[in-house]
Image (tube, rainbow, N blue to C red; front, side):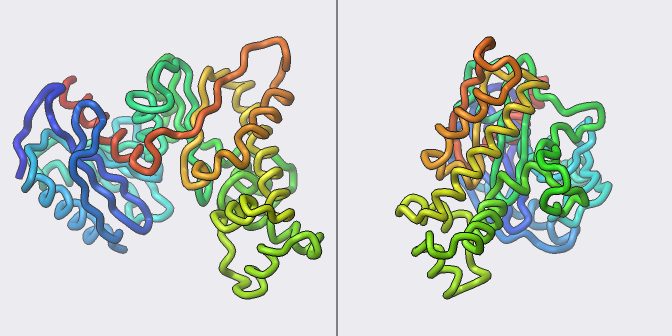
Length: 324
């Protein structure tokens, strides 16, 4: 087991607790990943906590560790000690930070995974130098982190900002949250597939690559494959990416009318395809924002830290806790 080292020289562990995998990394004070480990996510709460314990102990066997941060896709209490609910994890009103801290004998903090990623990008990546920063993690759905004046904004109850479920289309596509027309139903990896299938049905003669893929494996289409087909010149895939860019611009304009960020970072699985949509999204955003042409616009950048951002941010937040 590691020792409870304090200060900026302390190494900390950041763990991205996802629905399919646990990814843990040892991170130094400069945001550099020094070591890591990976394991499938267990299905029960007890097995999940046992798995986290094993991951930390494995890394502590090779490094002196001062604390642990967990990045979780779910609702976290404002004191960052308890997981209220996580849709893809078995925790409900679970005092995860306290329980794991007792087991490990070192400080443990929780953070929403998008907040952790936003903090990492702010400290070490694409959001460095920003003041009011929005981080959009676009994958299966939309996760969002917000910094106001360089401080993470979590809301009154620790659940802000749930921007993926802002309604952008009245009576639109049904969402798993129970509403219709949510932003993530038009601007996510899942949305890319839905839009591509709709456009294929309406314009079957316009596609060669996607049409073959869907015919060969009707349920196997993914957002990554849509983006790849667009890169290869498939007309339906290109139109799908154009729709994605339009909805990204629509949502960013709405959010900017409320928060007026100076910097937006686009992260998540879809960010790897940024060259296919980001310029168009910037143009839509600039046109749709209130006061277009008469106000400064936010800079919109792709992630620098990629999939490691959640781990790096959780580790850095754990380090900050050690210093307090």
